[in-house]
Amino acid sequence: MSGQHGDLAGDHGELPVAARVRRLEERVIAAGLTTDAELDAVLARLYRDASPVNGARMAARAWADPGYAERLLADGNAAAAELGFGGAGLSYRLKVLANAPGLHNLVVCTLCSCYPVSLLGPSPSWYKSLAYRSRAVREPRAVLAEFGLALPEGTEVAVWDATAETRYLVLPVRPPGTERLGEDELASLVTREGLIGTAAV
Amino acid sequence: MSLPPGTRVRARAGDPGHHTRLPRYVRGHTGEIVECTGEWPLPDDGARGLVPPRVEPVYTVRFPAAQLWGEGDHVVTVEAWESYLEEAG
Amino acid sequence: MADAGEGGHGAGKGQSVSRVHDVGGQSGFGPVVRDDDGQPFHADWEARVYALSGALRARGVFTTDEFRDAIERISPQEYLAAGYYERWLAAIEALLDRKGVR
Picture (spheres, rainbow over the protein chains, first blue to last red):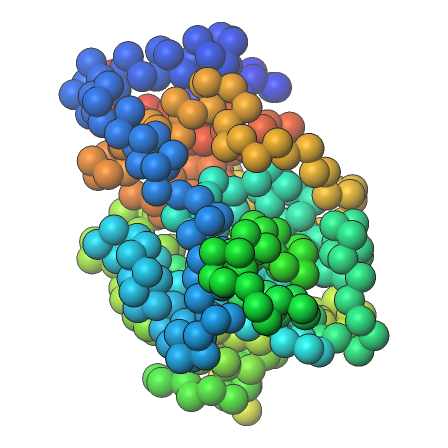
């Protein structure tokens, strides 16, 4: 299976990639290992259920309701279930990391690109990039600066590498001047980058 | 072995030839247990088709960046299966 | 410690694989490029690879551990040159080959 130097995956490497994928689909369907319906269902579930709006709603609820915030930080899975996320429960352990004045959290998966898809939607290309995976643990402030985030002097930075079964969500600090906003409006302030830690909110 | 929060541990050195989830950048370095995150099957066994896989406690372990790279004022945490760690005292 | 089992699908049989995927702390990868338009897939084939991975794992054809292992066995040159879903594709092909799926 070593194939030619430069060929991807040995014998399979000569075809254009789209043709390779079609051939692979035909192969597994012919072998009875899946069906078109099952393949479609995987994508349908992704598009229907996975969105950063979910994580944003959890953050907004935590800002509006200190009791929920406490539960969210103590048991992310139970708190997500309270809001109906994750169908019959999340398939991973969810740990929510609270930012605070003086503490900023940043999430990465250096080994591959693990990520709480159901709460954040499909992961962005930059999160999966070798540049982010290599640099976030070593020079987080420089990476944050590239994202336009300059942390106040003296802010501690904690970088969380998702190497096992836990997926992390950052709970941003509630922006000042938002005391009168309802939960829906609060949720609209929260970005995917804020929930990963590459933005303030 | 149950490791309470605050226990100082060293990530084992050594480079297994098989799939593992302990990143190279922490191997041989000393950190502190933050919490135990439950018990999970060892991916080293799962990837090699070892049945049944060993099930072990998994710990969140925090390392100062200065320990890992000689510079940096931040901390880095990883999640490590118990057999990836030894007590550092 | 040499890999006692089969070599990676990018390496010769019996050789250790370098597992170049373990990039935490490495230098030289440049700035974090943010060309993301928010779309999960940049070509239809990427979505199909995503679906194949999910469906085959749901059916138990291979586990997530085996899938990650197969990605990590890609040779360093191929791993670094390949796009994210190209690695997934190579991993699925290699797993099916190894499991004798015709």
